[in-house]
Length: 281
Image: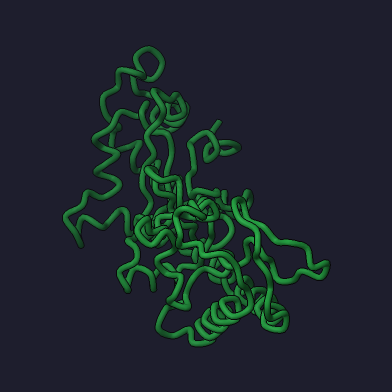
């Protein structure tokens, strides 16, 4: 989905935001004495089209979105606060709360869409929540199903574009001052490569925790004449061009195949021990 063209998507999202805002009632969450924003510590998945809108309107940067196995992305947690990066400490709440483009999942807690037993609804800290317009809440529930369907369709398209992201990673040095993936690999020992990460528009490498022997079997298969493989693999200072070419070819051939077989990773990370499984002897 492209942000400016998806009028149907925006109608659903904005109508949903309006309905939920009008259908629930509760304590003042902006009061830091009452609320510490605990619900903002829940991982939320969103489509790329919504992420693009947040970026275009100054609420986020590309690095704030992490690949997801549910929708296209999920929202980054702030390491300092343990909350979604959209949480505003000064507001004691979400920065996009009043934009009509808040992620639908964020509206559901703690009320849900109905309270037929009329029980007292409480969040982690406060009671007193209630649904004041059940008709609006029911309409919102139906809209959520349509929203989820559109997000799932978009996520499938995004996964299929992973080869485009790999292609960009290999040529981005032509379009920016950043080093491309091949050049990055040339400067590292094979024993420190842990895998690859699918990010906003490119494939990045993952460093191993300490040393990894995963590339040893790759080197053994595709460059068996190397003298360092068996005796001094950990002392190899950088990957040779032959191995880098084969590694890129391998990714181009097997990464999308791996995702189709196993599904996307919840963080968009693909360690070598998973990628090489069943393919490298």
